[in-house]
Amino acid sequence: MSHTPSSPSHDRGSSGCIVGLIVALLVAGLLCLALFVAVVASFGFRSVRADARVEAARTQAKMVGSAVELYQVDTGSLPPNLDALLKAPADAAAAEKWNGPYLHMSSPLDPWGKPYQYEILDPKNFAIWSSGPDGITPSPDDVHGLR
Image (cartoon, rainbow, N blue to C red; front, side, top):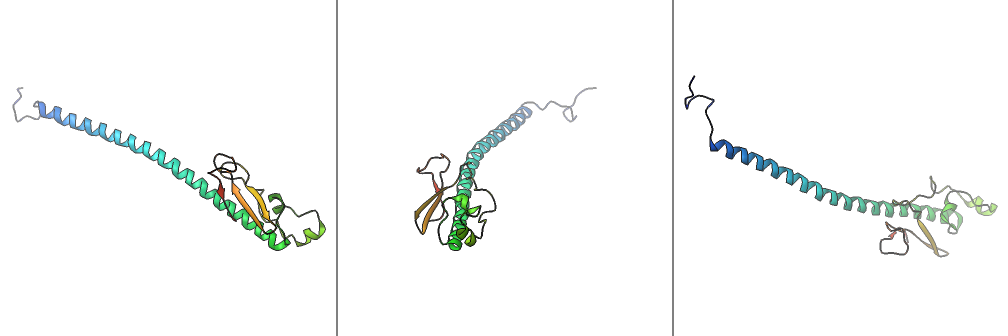
């Protein structure tokens, strides 16, 4: 059986090599593009995750601040600490005005696992904040809630 140019088993020559090379380059290019996208996405997701933690800390600090305000409305004074939002005061007169618990969980931790900071500024004003990712107060990454 002899091979003729019209038979399907003819040698493709250099055109087959060029097509194979183009396909190999396309596959390599797609792999490089996928790697690049994965690296960029990894850095982008870290930033999004960090932003989400900051926003969660801000929201939780505002929630705790709202509980402090409710305590203040009910009792006429600010709680001495955040634990006072969870259990009635020992003083009978103060306990009578207390309508808590004002939080339905133990004092929440910020997204970095640290307790929220609470400070009475004067008899009517307070501040609540998270010490942020570095866990140090005061520092530039602190996340403030109410007041």
